[in-house]
Length: 153
Image 1 (cartoon, rainbow, N blue to C red):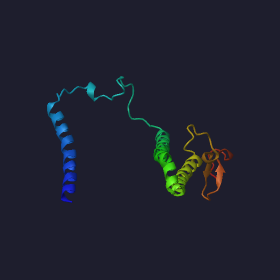
Image 2: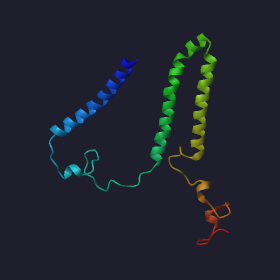
Image 3: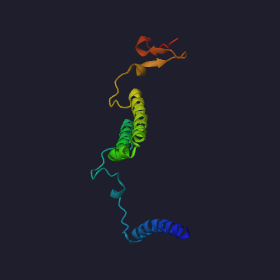
Image 4: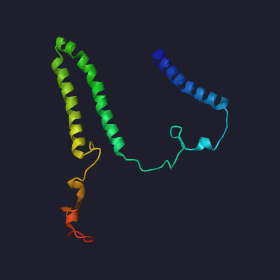
């Protein structure tokens, strides 16, 4: 038991010491040549034409996260599909099928939610729920129906 813990401790120590040693050696050996051009924003080798801080559309992140979730789904589903025939021969094919069905059903519910929420629309068109505003009584009031400068009653 102690040997197993000692080997884990050894790998943790090596895993910490090797990167620290490499970073320290790099800090000691590399030349220090400060330059104003090195402090500019890096844009794939191009000279920057404007500020780097600008509003970035968060829809890129949402679409990327949705893609990642369903990409991981395929990564988890593929191994089950490759050994499914063996499981059927052993008699546990029904259980494996139900587990896979529940997994895909949960992800399908997530897809339906994202689809209903409108996060899959790349260019959001003027939808009715974005044109409507809620007044104090929580009744939807169409924006175009109100005279300019007047508040809904």
